[in-house]
Image 1 (tube, helix red, strand yellow):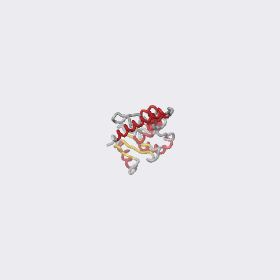
Image 2 (cartoon, rainbow, N blue to C red; image 1 turned 60 degrees about the horizontal axis):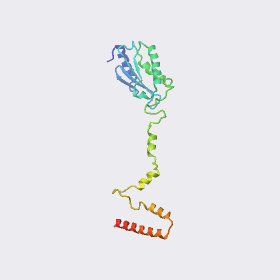
Image 3 (cartoon, rainbow, N blue to C red; image 1 turned 60 degrees about the vertical axis):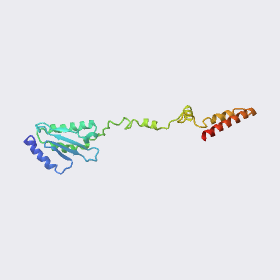
Image 4 (cartoon, helix red, strand yellow; image 1 turned 180 degrees about the horizontal axis):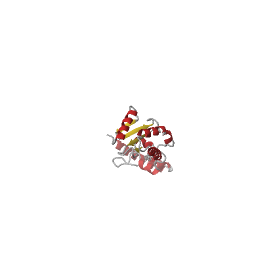
Length: 205
């Protein structure tokens, strides 16, 4: 139950006024919540008011700490709370919860005039929430091999530790083309070529 007779009377009045209002919530007999503005409105906020035992002789506790208000910048929250505290001072000693709620509704546009959505901490200063994007793009870039790396790939051995057949064909052709085709050299080359073919077919059989 509410702590005193004044609170009990105000509680009954609030229940009667906001009955059926989806924007209003009675969190407890001494704690209330009202959404100021439509859900889709970027300037909407939720106002929480709770009563200490000495209310209304002392002012109520006012909060904008709900999750719904996380999008509101801290400076805007401070402005709203300071303006509401001025209303509290003007109404001390009287039932004021309804007055504060309605004042916030009537002055919402002015209170949120300079509203800028708070920037989530996960975003970087440039607005890029994926700081590793550049690194990932670099990783995905096709690797460019050097000539030495390409040569090592060509000359790599098979699973038996042997070079693949024909690995030195290019070198043989280059060697032949660099010499003068004398009769002596042609004979030497023919013998070597015959030996190579013999070795090749013996490997394949």
